[in-house]
Amino acid sequence: MKDSAHLFSGSGITARLRDGRSVTVRAATARDAGDVSAMHVRCSTETVRHRYHSVPPMTGRFLAQLLGTEIALVAVAPNQAVVALANLGRDDGDAGELAVVVEDRWQRAGLGSALLDHLVGMARLVGYREVYTVGLPGNGWYRTTLARHGRTRLERSDGHDTMRLWLRSPPVRLPQRLGATAA
Image 1 (cartoon, rainbow, N blue to C red):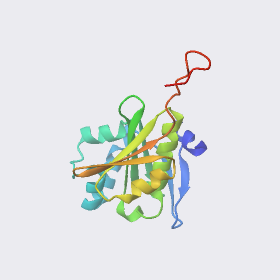
Image 2 (image 1 turned 135 degrees about the horizontal axis):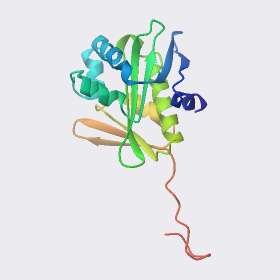
Image 3 (image 1 turned 90 degrees about the vertical axis):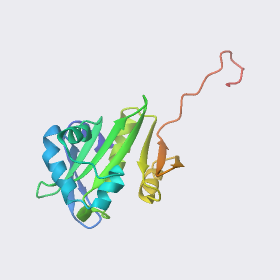
């Protein structure tokens, strides 16, 4: 969580992946729009569909939305190419949606998990009560990664699964009179 806190200041951190490659993870800015768009072009249709459940056009407005979420992170390769994007957007007060997309050549090396871990750590730091992901049915990666952080719940509906992670317990109601039981 300490490393995740550094991401709020805009200073990046180096992440070493399972395959030995390294990336710099940092807060995304509006200046990253072109590089984020280029990353999406390098992604397979399957990767994009898994992230967005469709293949959206990378318009300026859409990119601004992606980079303008409450917390947006990019992973930058040594050649300065953006190779992953992670988002956390506040939803209903103290809940938020997590999302990660990793360029195909950088998948299965732990980058997506590292980014999701940072988002969960940052969500805890800023007081989210819960975070969730919405994925296509059968996407076990989100379930496994989020379960490392605590109690999760899977909700299935037509066309997608939602995995929820509680980050802290709701406040306990104290009895009004000493000796009374809390309802």
